[in-house]
Image 1 (cartoon, rainbow, N blue to C red):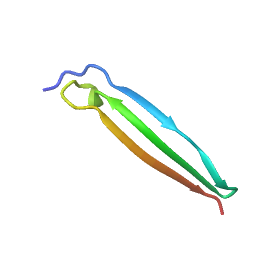
Image 2: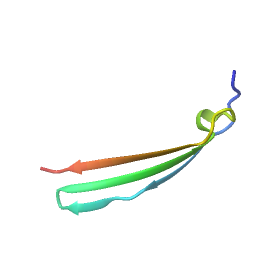
Image 3: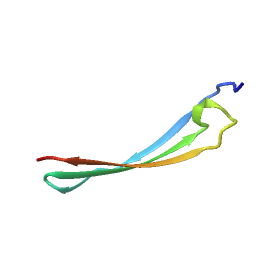
Image 4: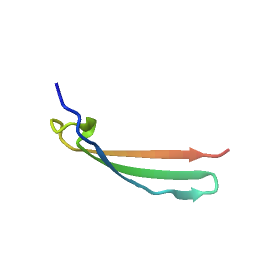
Amino acid sequence: MFVQDHELDLKLNYSYCWSPSVMLRPNLQYVIHPGATNQVKNALVGGLTVKLDF
């Protein structure tokens, strides 16, 4: 059983308006001690949000 300690998230977001109807938002997240345990390695997570207006 793991003992919960702490979790730290570092996030970076950027919004780019490609046109008036298209917005892109890439993001990076670095998680230190995911799940608040020292037994799990750190994690790097990437994502992309796309917003379309019709």
